[in-house]
Image (cartoon, rainbow, N blue to C red):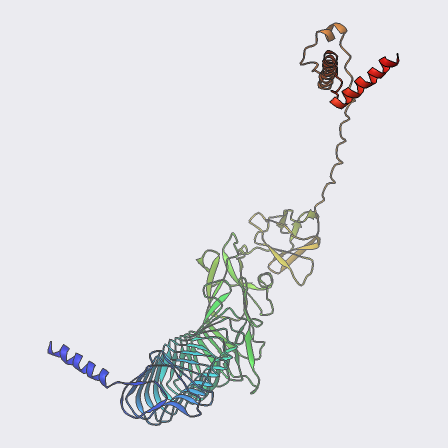
Length: 571
């Protein structure tokens, strides 16, 4: 209980002695410091200057913003035990700068953005950087004459360089992601013990450029980069367990010897990939030019593996495991080898030699793998040719086959010797150009082989048994398509015959279903009846009630009486 109370007391005492920072300042005493707000610095010197050892600065995620000509945090020379946590620096010439003699530096959770150099370390030792982010800087991390330490689990996406190492040793670049820059890691000078290990390089122009010597490049993955994964400009660099896939440019050397161990090319375990226990080259005679290794001289395809350095760089390829597509043949699959100039599966099988060993092993569905003690030339998988019959004396091969066939039609060919006996294990080829024969297969014990030719033309069938060969011509044409029959004439439709009118007796008794009522006639008749009936009713009313003369006024009555009186008086 006393220990717990003592710990709480000391912790509280330490917290009470911590100093808060809210503006640019100089830290001149050992202790714990907290950045409590963002700071924007418009000057040309240093925003925060550390002039003491055993200093811890916890920025708490706050940021320092500069003016491109200044330094965010400068650690003066010979200071030791500096711990910076969760600091964000941006728009400075140097985000964090450590002068010579600085030692035991720890940067945790750093974010450096849009600086000339995010972190710049000079002639000190032991700097550990973890969980950092370097973005949009000209140089993310600069090491100049530094010794010891590591940067790990960090993210680099900068304009020019992710990490720039000059004459620094025993520094480890571990488990980081590099993308979006022109260079991932660049070394220059004597960099003994500097290790680039377990990193993921993608989306870069040049992931690793080795102008320095004595670096160790191991366990890295390179994929989807625009340029060569590794540029080897100097000697004494060591390479192991590196993996390149998803890009056509592999690596290049500038007149220097190199040696890769446990080196993988192509997506691991898929057709068209290979691993090399040793992939090395001796120094060529010229001293200035680059020698490039890419998809044009290292062919990795599902059906072909071929490596050719054009004779300018002596290569040594040992303990090679190759993954290729299963050709799906009925008999045992064999490895065929030909000179490097043969670059298709058919040309390698037709012009190469079936190796007695190794025998390909099934790795997974449609994928086969085989191992070679050394790789020299071009390799493909195909059907293993049957062993020729022992002590068979053959002088002439007689071929029996059709002369005319159609495209895709099965051709059955029989090979016999001079005695008319079936000749098995005879290789049958067909070609229209002698430079490119196609292997159709091998005859069975009865001397027969059935196959088809997929295109039309004049072909030559060739049988080979040991040193004896025989040929026969065959014409392959497109199948005849029978003409379409003319369309059948439409049947003539006979004119409709008028049915005779039924006799009157049948018409008189025709049912309503056979002869329906004439609706127009019915409507007309009803209208006529209504019209006649209406007229008669009108006349009847007029005659019964004749119109009466209008009633005269009293003045008119007096006038009529006076007129009548005068007429009577005159008479």
